Image (cartoon, rainbow over all chains, first blue to last red; front, side):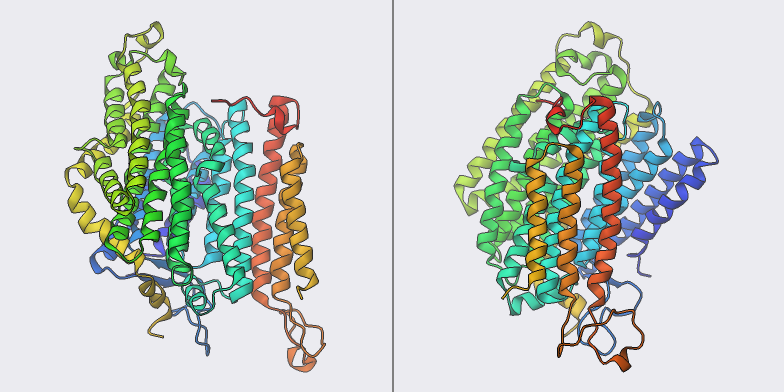
Length: 512
Length: 119
């Protein structure tokens, strides 16, 4: 049986039945949200296993057996197309979203309007899953907007505070402008080629690559760089991610900027434009933005005093690493170096989703127990919250890239490939890491320092918050134990499947 | 020659972007977003327009197509625009709701007053 449609069906059912189930009671609502996200996790893990074991691109056509129209030789229906990269992303999304739902049961206990909260968090998950599954460019836009609207609403969820509203408004205006650019790009592509299926679009573009398509590419990449928070346009991210509730920050920083930004850049650059555009030029454009993002994001993280803001800037920096890997993968397309760089970018995407979710959950636990996220007031936290501090140390060590943890393997792949491609880029990547280390060491010094008055009254958060955090710690350590097996067994095949543009096209078009 | 409807569409988009960058009132920003969207919708709709033998095209829902002998406009762009309008309404209503909340907290609709987050 094809499990692919259930990845969307289950969360969609859960979203619309949740308000009804919520009528029974508060406990039933939480249990239902947990059940739905757990079932989604199960389905996506089956999907990942299927794709990984067969190494074939799965295609699902909505409403028919074959994407081709009756009597015509080209696809007219909406298709969902899943290769290994999509499956990895879907699994990561479902995993982190499940833990975020579990975490928010205790974290959001004192808030009101929770039925809306759980509906929105599942809609957010649904939108991201749709983005990574789809093979139709307008369908992608619809899912992108589903995801974006849910995340605007969630950033401004605590509408009794000015912080949430201001961040929500900034995020919403920048995000909507970016979405409009993306829609304009899609409209131009449709006007030029008369199709919306990504695979057919790639085939037509390879035959005839026009100026309109180049302009469309510029609009699409521009809009997506907005959405992923690359540096000239990163300011919304530093406002929006800290202002959201911490369980949402974990999803926004861990997943949204990747599913709605970096993943789509990879998909569009490789699978749609890959056969037509000059990949070397496109790769260098992305590398340029990546280097800026890398340096500015990590350097800005060092000077922050607000803990969640520090983490948000660190997210900007880590997006820089992922974009760097992607850019090198494009610029050195077809070589071993390019493949390693792409694999490193995919690996780092997964690792960063786990690490940053953990770090934001730690920040949320501190905020929940102490009511402040100002680093100047948090000194000596290790004395009263040792378990939380331990989780933070693991997350920080992983994000810096210390050897026994998962961040090391992905960063190593990125350093190795960037140094082989161009030593200058390798140096920039190392400088970024130096800033990153400085930022996190500062937080650790605060946590391990002399206890202040305020911190002495703190206590550990409850089990419902600690458990998701420790599952993530376990995942970091477990992935750190088998770094090369994961990169050889999963990430390199994912990179080579992404680089195999013809395979992606033929999966939909058949043997045409 | 570029058809006039494309010029109009890009003019609308450009006007929207201009207003988005240079206006300070939140409500005007919302209108600017809407104008940009309208421009894109016009662009999409005009991609579906066909003029053959100087006969005006019919709508895709028109059933007496065989007797009229006129070309049909493309149905797909209309479906896309319909979807996009629905999405636009969602964004618009959320933006207005947030603006009301912002007015409650800040007592002003000036974007330059929304500058309390720093760092």
